Length: 62
Image (tube, rainbow, N blue to C red; front, side, top):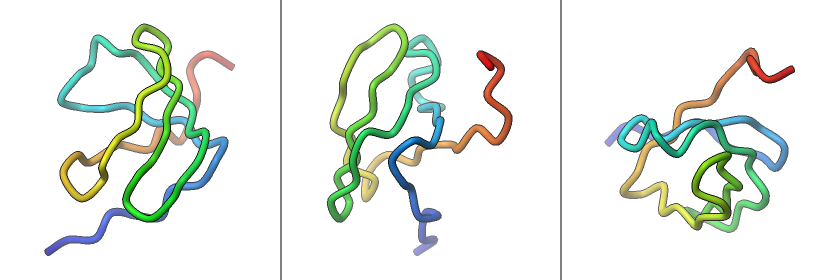
């Protein structure tokens, strides 16, 4: 099993399975549960044991 890199509050991520959600900012991380505030979907709790989030290194919104 491939481990996802550690996520931390403040990081910008995207859900590759739901590109229409837009970019999201990590709000909190508790174990495999990550709360992310997405541009077009709002606040979502993601189980990273099931969903892999891509970290966006260079935030295009900046």
